[in-house]
Image (cartoon, rainbow, N blue to C red; front, side, top):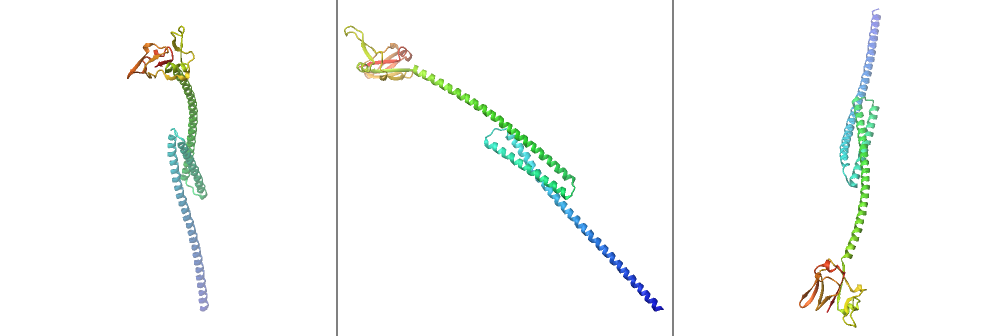
Length: 302
Protein backbone atom coordinates (compact mmCIF):
# COMPACT_ATOMS: atom_id res chain seq x y z
CA UNK A 1 0.00 0.00 0.00
CA UNK A 2 2.79 2.31 0.95
CA UNK A 3 4.57 1.42 -2.24
CA UNK A 4 1.60 2.40 -4.39
CA UNK A 5 1.29 5.75 -2.61
CA UNK A 6 4.98 6.45 -3.04
CA UNK A 7 4.80 5.64 -6.77
CA UNK A 8 1.84 7.97 -7.20
CA UNK A 9 3.67 10.76 -5.44
CA UNK A 10 6.67 10.24 -7.70
CA UNK A 11 4.49 10.39 -10.80
CA UNK A 12 2.88 13.63 -9.60
CA UNK A 13 6.27 15.16 -8.88
CA UNK A 14 7.53 14.21 -12.31
CA UNK A 15 4.42 15.66 -13.90
CA UNK A 16 4.87 18.90 -11.93
CA UNK A 17 8.50 19.11 -12.98
CA UNK A 18 7.59 18.49 -16.65
CA UNK A 19 4.84 21.11 -16.54
CA UNK A 20 7.20 23.59 -14.86
CA UNK A 21 9.86 22.89 -17.47
CA UNK A 22 7.38 23.35 -20.29
CA UNK A 23 6.14 26.60 -18.79
CA UNK A 24 9.74 27.86 -18.41
CA UNK A 25 10.60 26.94 -21.97
CA UNK A 26 7.50 28.70 -23.27
CA UNK A 27 8.28 31.81 -21.26
CA UNK A 28 11.89 31.84 -22.45
CA UNK A 29 10.81 31.44 -26.03
CA UNK A 30 8.35 34.30 -25.71
CA UNK A 31 10.95 36.54 -24.09
CA UNK A 32 13.46 35.67 -26.79
CA UNK A 33 10.91 36.54 -29.47
CA UNK A 34 10.16 39.85 -27.78
CA UNK A 35 13.85 40.68 -27.53
CA UNK A 36 14.35 39.86 -31.20
CA UNK A 37 11.39 42.04 -32.15
CA UNK A 38 12.74 44.91 -30.05
CA UNK A 39 16.14 44.53 -31.66
CA UNK A 40 14.52 44.64 -35.09
CA UNK A 41 12.55 47.73 -34.15
CA UNK A 42 15.67 49.34 -32.71
CA UNK A 43 17.62 48.58 -35.89
CA UNK A 44 14.77 50.14 -37.93
CA UNK A 45 14.79 53.22 -35.72
CA UNK A 46 18.56 53.50 -36.05
CA UNK A 47 18.32 53.20 -39.82
CA UNK A 48 15.54 55.79 -39.86
CA UNK A 49 17.69 58.11 -37.78
CA UNK A 50 20.64 57.55 -40.10
CA UNK A 51 18.45 58.23 -43.13
CA UNK A 52 17.11 61.33 -41.42
CA UNK A 53 20.61 62.55 -40.57
CA UNK A 54 21.79 61.86 -44.11
CA UNK A 55 18.81 63.72 -45.56
CA UNK A 56 19.34 66.64 -43.16
CA UNK A 57 23.03 66.86 -44.05
CA UNK A 58 22.23 66.72 -47.76
CA UNK A 59 19.59 69.42 -47.40
CA UNK A 60 21.84 71.68 -45.35
CA UNK A 61 24.70 71.29 -47.84
CA UNK A 62 22.39 71.87 -50.80
CA UNK A 63 20.81 74.92 -49.16
CA UNK A 64 24.23 76.39 -48.48
CA UNK A 65 25.32 75.85 -52.10
CA UNK A 66 22.11 77.36 -53.48
CA UNK A 67 22.35 80.37 -51.16
CA UNK A 68 25.96 80.95 -52.26
CA UNK A 69 24.85 80.83 -55.90
CA UNK A 70 22.03 83.27 -55.22
CA UNK A 71 24.42 85.59 -53.38
CA UNK A 72 26.84 85.48 -56.32
CA UNK A 73 24.00 86.16 -58.77
CA UNK A 74 22.75 89.10 -56.72
CA UNK A 75 26.21 90.68 -56.51
CA UNK A 76 26.89 90.02 -60.20
CA UNK A 77 23.54 91.50 -61.19
CA UNK A 78 24.24 94.68 -59.21
CA UNK A 79 27.57 95.05 -61.00
CA UNK A 80 25.93 94.47 -64.39
CA UNK A 81 23.22 96.99 -63.58
CA UNK A 82 25.94 99.62 -63.17
CA UNK A 83 27.95 98.40 -66.19
CA UNK A 84 24.89 98.53 -68.43
CA UNK A 85 24.65 102.28 -67.80
CA UNK A 86 28.12 102.86 -69.24
CA UNK A 87 28.87 103.30 -72.89
CA UNK A 88 31.13 100.60 -74.21
CA UNK A 89 32.25 98.68 -77.20
CA UNK A 90 31.08 95.33 -78.50
CA UNK A 91 33.36 93.36 -76.14
CA UNK A 92 31.80 94.91 -73.02
CA UNK A 93 28.28 94.29 -74.28
CA UNK A 94 29.17 90.71 -75.18
CA UNK A 95 30.60 90.17 -71.66
CA UNK A 96 27.34 91.45 -70.09
CA UNK A 97 25.27 89.13 -72.29
CA UNK A 98 27.48 86.17 -71.35
CA UNK A 99 27.19 87.00 -67.63
CA UNK A 100 23.39 87.16 -67.87
CA UNK A 101 23.38 83.79 -69.64
CA UNK A 102 25.55 82.35 -66.84
CA UNK A 103 23.18 83.71 -64.18
CA UNK A 104 20.17 82.24 -65.95
CA UNK A 105 21.89 78.86 -66.11
CA UNK A 106 22.77 79.04 -62.39
CA UNK A 107 19.19 79.96 -61.47
CA UNK A 108 17.81 77.12 -63.58
CA UNK A 109 20.25 74.70 -61.98
CA UNK A 110 19.33 75.91 -58.48
CA UNK A 111 15.62 75.60 -59.25
CA UNK A 112 16.09 72.02 -60.52
CA UNK A 113 18.16 71.18 -57.43
CA UNK A 114 15.44 72.47 -55.10
CA UNK A 115 12.77 70.48 -56.95
CA UNK A 116 14.92 67.36 -56.58
CA UNK A 117 15.42 67.98 -52.83
CA UNK A 118 11.71 68.61 -52.34
CA UNK A 119 10.91 65.33 -54.05
CA UNK A 120 13.43 63.43 -51.92
CA UNK A 121 12.06 65.02 -48.74
CA UNK A 122 8.53 64.02 -49.70
CA UNK A 123 9.47 60.44 -50.63
CA UNK A 124 11.45 59.97 -47.40
CA UNK A 125 8.38 60.58 -45.29
CA UNK A 126 10.38 62.90 -43.07
CA UNK A 127 8.32 65.90 -42.06
CA UNK A 128 10.55 68.86 -41.21
CA UNK A 129 8.57 72.09 -41.40
CA UNK A 130 11.64 74.31 -41.16
CA UNK A 131 13.10 72.74 -44.30
CA UNK A 132 9.81 73.15 -46.12
CA UNK A 133 9.87 76.84 -45.21
CA UNK A 134 13.49 77.05 -46.35
CA UNK A 135 12.63 75.50 -49.70
CA UNK A 136 9.73 77.90 -50.12
CA UNK A 137 12.00 80.85 -49.26
CA UNK A 138 14.65 79.72 -51.76
CA UNK A 139 12.04 79.29 -54.47
CA UNK A 140 10.79 82.82 -53.74
CA UNK A 141 14.36 84.16 -53.89
CA UNK A 142 14.97 82.43 -57.23
CA UNK A 143 11.74 83.87 -58.60
CA UNK A 144 12.78 87.34 -57.44
CA UNK A 145 16.23 86.98 -59.04
CA UNK A 146 14.61 85.78 -62.26
CA UNK A 147 12.34 88.84 -62.32
CA UNK A 148 15.25 91.19 -61.67
CA UNK A 149 17.35 89.58 -64.41
CA UNK A 150 14.42 89.93 -66.83
CA UNK A 151 14.19 93.60 -65.79
CA UNK A 152 17.93 93.98 -66.37
CA UNK A 153 17.62 92.42 -69.82
CA UNK A 154 14.77 94.79 -70.64
CA UNK A 155 16.86 97.70 -69.40
CA UNK A 156 19.77 96.64 -71.61
CA UNK A 157 17.41 96.15 -74.57
CA UNK A 158 15.91 99.62 -74.06
CA UNK A 159 19.41 101.07 -73.86
CA UNK A 160 20.37 99.26 -77.08
CA UNK A 161 17.29 100.72 -78.80
CA UNK A 162 18.19 104.17 -77.49
CA UNK A 163 21.81 103.79 -78.61
CA UNK A 164 20.67 102.54 -82.03
CA UNK A 165 18.38 105.58 -82.33
CA UNK A 166 21.22 107.88 -81.26
CA UNK A 167 23.58 106.16 -83.68
CA UNK A 168 21.08 106.66 -86.50
CA UNK A 169 20.72 110.34 -85.57
CA UNK A 170 24.49 110.70 -85.43
CA UNK A 171 24.80 109.06 -88.85
CA UNK A 172 22.18 111.47 -90.21
CA UNK A 173 24.00 114.41 -88.64
CA UNK A 174 27.32 113.20 -90.01
CA UNK A 175 25.81 112.92 -93.49
CA UNK A 176 24.39 116.44 -93.15
CA UNK A 177 27.73 117.75 -91.86
CA UNK A 178 29.60 115.98 -94.66
CA UNK A 179 27.18 117.42 -97.20
CA UNK A 180 27.67 120.86 -95.70
CA UNK A 181 31.43 120.41 -95.67
CA UNK A 182 31.36 119.31 -99.31
CA UNK A 183 29.26 122.36 -100.15
CA UNK A 184 31.63 124.63 -98.22
CA UNK A 185 34.60 122.99 -99.90
CA UNK A 186 33.01 123.49 -103.29
CA UNK A 187 32.28 127.12 -102.45
CA UNK A 188 35.83 127.58 -101.17
CA UNK A 189 37.18 126.09 -104.38
CA UNK A 190 35.04 128.53 -106.38
CA UNK A 191 36.28 131.40 -104.20
CA UNK A 192 39.88 130.20 -104.57
CA UNK A 193 39.41 129.98 -108.33
CA UNK A 194 37.98 133.49 -108.45
CA UNK A 195 40.83 134.79 -106.30
CA UNK A 196 43.28 132.96 -108.52
CA UNK A 197 41.75 134.51 -111.63
CA UNK A 198 41.74 137.95 -110.01
CA UNK A 199 45.36 137.58 -108.93
CA UNK A 200 46.51 136.18 -112.25
CA UNK A 201 48.89 138.38 -114.24
CA UNK A 202 51.05 137.88 -117.31
CA UNK A 203 54.47 139.19 -118.19
CA UNK A 204 56.58 139.07 -121.38
CA UNK A 205 59.93 140.73 -121.96
CA UNK A 206 62.47 140.70 -124.75
CA UNK A 207 63.82 142.78 -127.61
CA UNK A 208 61.39 144.41 -129.97
CA UNK A 209 62.24 141.85 -132.62
CA UNK A 210 61.53 138.95 -130.26
CA UNK A 211 58.27 140.45 -129.10
CA UNK A 212 57.22 141.25 -132.64
CA UNK A 213 58.00 137.75 -133.86
CA UNK A 214 55.80 136.36 -131.10
CA UNK A 215 52.89 138.62 -132.02
CA UNK A 216 53.17 140.77 -128.93
CA UNK A 217 54.32 144.14 -130.31
CA UNK A 218 53.82 146.06 -133.49
CA UNK A 219 54.51 149.55 -134.82
CA UNK A 220 51.81 151.81 -136.01
CA UNK A 221 50.80 155.38 -136.62
CA UNK A 222 53.18 158.05 -137.98
CA UNK A 223 53.37 159.46 -141.53
CA UNK A 224 55.27 157.96 -144.45
CA UNK A 225 57.02 155.54 -142.14
CA UNK A 226 58.07 158.26 -139.76
CA UNK A 227 56.99 158.66 -136.13
CA UNK A 228 55.63 155.11 -135.77
CA UNK A 229 54.88 154.09 -132.19
CA UNK A 230 55.42 150.72 -130.60
CA UNK A 231 52.20 149.30 -129.25
CA UNK A 232 50.62 146.04 -128.20
CA UNK A 233 48.95 143.86 -130.76
CA UNK A 234 45.24 143.32 -130.39
CA UNK A 235 45.50 139.53 -130.35
CA UNK A 236 48.43 138.72 -128.10
CA UNK A 237 50.18 135.36 -128.23
CA UNK A 238 49.22 133.98 -124.82
CA UNK A 239 51.82 131.20 -125.00
CA UNK A 240 54.69 133.68 -124.95
CA UNK A 241 53.60 135.22 -121.67
CA UNK A 242 54.60 133.92 -118.25
CA UNK A 243 51.79 133.60 -115.77
CA UNK A 244 52.31 134.98 -112.24
CA UNK A 245 50.49 135.84 -109.04
CA UNK A 246 50.20 139.59 -108.85
CA UNK A 247 49.95 139.51 -105.06
CA UNK A 248 53.07 137.42 -104.64
CA UNK A 249 55.25 138.85 -107.42
CA UNK A 250 57.17 141.89 -106.21
CA UNK A 251 59.84 142.04 -108.92
CA UNK A 252 60.58 140.87 -112.48
CA UNK A 253 64.24 140.03 -113.32
CA UNK A 254 65.56 141.67 -116.53
CA UNK A 255 69.41 142.01 -116.49
CA UNK A 256 69.55 144.25 -119.55
CA UNK A 257 71.22 147.49 -120.46
CA UNK A 258 67.95 149.24 -121.21
CA UNK A 259 64.34 148.49 -120.35
CA UNK A 260 61.05 150.10 -121.18
CA UNK A 261 57.50 149.17 -120.25
CA UNK A 262 55.31 149.08 -123.34
CA UNK A 263 52.06 148.14 -121.58
CA UNK A 264 50.15 150.79 -119.67
CA UNK A 265 50.98 151.09 -115.95
CA UNK A 266 51.12 154.14 -113.68
CA UNK A 267 54.68 155.45 -113.43
CA UNK A 268 54.42 155.70 -109.65
CA UNK A 269 53.64 152.01 -109.29
CA UNK A 270 57.01 150.64 -110.43
CA UNK A 271 60.72 151.36 -110.68
CA UNK A 272 63.76 149.88 -112.42
CA UNK A 273 66.55 148.76 -110.09
CA UNK A 274 70.13 148.91 -111.37
CA UNK A 275 72.94 146.66 -110.16
CA UNK A 276 76.50 146.53 -111.50
CA UNK A 277 75.70 148.92 -114.36
CA UNK A 278 72.68 146.99 -115.68
CA UNK A 279 68.98 147.04 -115.00
CA UNK A 280 68.69 144.02 -112.73
CA UNK A 281 64.94 143.89 -112.32
CA UNK A 282 61.68 145.75 -112.43
CA UNK A 283 60.44 146.43 -108.89
CA UNK A 284 56.65 146.58 -108.48
CA UNK A 285 56.25 149.20 -105.77
CA UNK A 286 52.45 149.21 -105.68
CA UNK A 287 50.95 145.96 -107.06
CA UNK A 288 47.34 147.17 -106.87
CA UNK A 289 48.13 150.27 -108.91
CA UNK A 290 50.54 148.51 -111.25
CA UNK A 291 48.01 145.89 -112.37
CA UNK A 292 44.90 148.06 -112.16
CA UNK A 293 44.80 149.08 -115.84
CA UNK A 294 46.08 145.85 -117.39
CA UNK A 295 46.95 142.36 -116.24
CA UNK A 296 49.49 142.11 -119.05
CA UNK A 297 52.98 143.56 -118.54
CA UNK A 298 55.19 143.87 -121.66
CA UNK A 299 58.77 145.07 -121.26
CA UNK A 300 61.10 145.82 -124.13
CA UNK A 301 64.76 145.32 -123.34
CA UNK A 302 67.94 146.13 -125.26
